[in-house]
Image 1 (cartoon, rainbow over the protein chains, first blue to last red):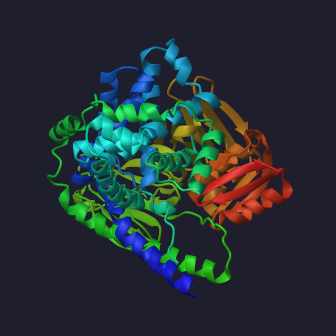
Image 2: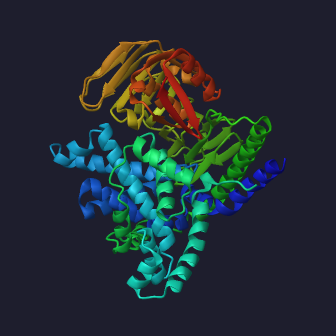
Image 3: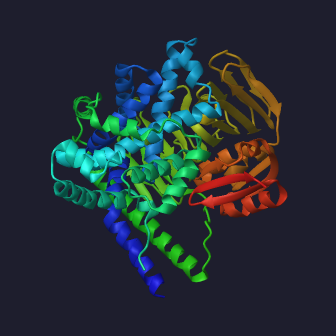
Length: 204
Length: 383
């Protein structure tokens, strides 16, 4: 019985506290809200460009194509139920538009042969690229807010460097390294909870 | 690419793992997914390196250009307020339902994923760009030319205002999300059933010589007979032209083919590419794929039209194709643990308004496949 009650409390708690931001964002996307569009540019623009760049191999074209895709999203009535549907839509659109662009440009192009025919292997390759960009997007989201030194500490500890190595490298005391880590992880854990709403674990 | 949601999950896990915050279970899940999805090139060093260097793509600059282009924030406000309220209500209802379901599961101690069918859901975009979410509830909207839009229990009806008919053609668009459906009655009395993941663009009022509409996805049309004004459905590859009949058109972006099935009357299909013209008799179907001739074949219309009456009929169909249809209606994703099952053929009926589980059980009993549901993802393996 205790578990049962706390589970419900857990759901409500998670829903209202953790998921509210994401839900607001999705509502903003569905409602074509200017604030949500700012977040698309801050959060998604660069990863999508890098992703398009892998297929097109041209920086300028990649940037133009992503811009066009975001404008299209603004102009098209689309309704996303959740954040993952939205993510999937963005990458899929960019992927498809890249392929179209290549196809239009040159039918004999070697890259067309590489990308346009979805053998299982190539498909998983383009999906690896999505995961790559998504991980960077999520990491950026938490570390971009940090003061520069703390950022470096976290990046180094992600490289599995030990505290004493970091302290030597950055010329700061080990205690300062620990302090940076502690404060950084307090922020990161919060972000993770809201990001990984789907995997929320219940108390009790 | 239907299993993309798996990758959303994968990136969540890898992200957590890179920060050193994944627990043992999550690490195992991550490793399994990396192997089963055959992902390569996810070098952690490379990810960190990218985070350390300056980004070549500047989101702020792009946002600036977008703002100049769209003048964001002017004139969009009013309906934004409205939709966010509506959306929050929808979210609350969904969460409410979800909570009550969870409670039920807890009581019975059964943890199984029941995946429910789609519902009446649509977004209508008016001529001025305003968008309105339609659900079951009753709503009345007036277009600027005086045409009345009346939405009630899953249907949207257009009624022209005879006194105010203007000569300017105004278009509305109705979009149906995955897991949705909606009915539509156009100003000329033509009835249209729109299936999931579909978009129809049409004039609010038919004033020209021809009645022309634009379709992406799948719809069933019952065209009001009017011999002076031909009714035309534009698809990605060709045009279906009729005077007054019932027929189904399917043109999903991912399927690369346009299929027109005639139930009664007469239609003409004109291919845009080859200019080929085909006249269809009832019970026949045209099929056009990219860069090939228009194919005509005799079919059992129920297999193609049944969805409108709440029935999916699959006859000797590849599992892959069956699942593609189900994905749209149940809004699910499918992962094939063993790709060979994609080509297995099955025959069976599915009640469209039932949960998917009944149908899956049926297939599982009679075939060499097994299904596992994880949230909204169905994993299919060989027995």
